[in-house]
Amino acid sequence: MKEMVVLLAEIVNTFHDIFLGLSHSLGWNLTDKELHFWIIGMLGIMCLIFVDVIFHALAKWSVTAISFLFTLSMVLVFVLAVEIQQKITGRGAMEFNDAAVSILGFLAFCTVYFLVKMIVKWIR
Image (cartoon, rainbow, N blue to C red; front, side, top):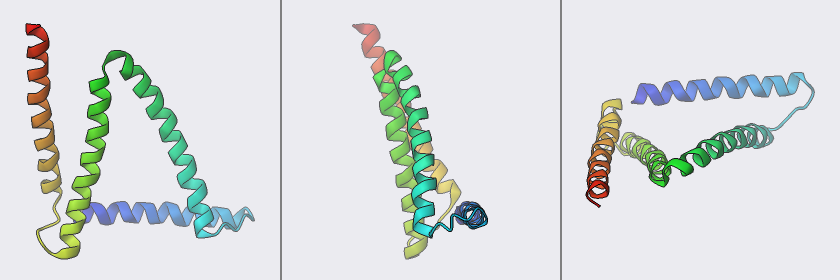
């Protein structure tokens, strides 16, 4: 897990340096805060448009699908936060397998929930 976080940090830092260098070479001379404003703003709106299209399509099919995707994203953020917290405090090992098993636990409980929901719907 530590290696994954370090790799992701290195990728983000590389892109940061590329965009900052590009900004200066184009004569824009953006500060770090301005660079963050533009890059995160553009990435965020692209993600919003993509997610909006997907969620509208899913809403016609199942609101539960939207609930699942939203909850999965919250669980992923929480799991990553727990692993980082373990590394910072030294109370547990920061491992990718811990994160993977956490997500599998969520998926297992979701499977049971969906099966029960289908059975109830089928009985009605």
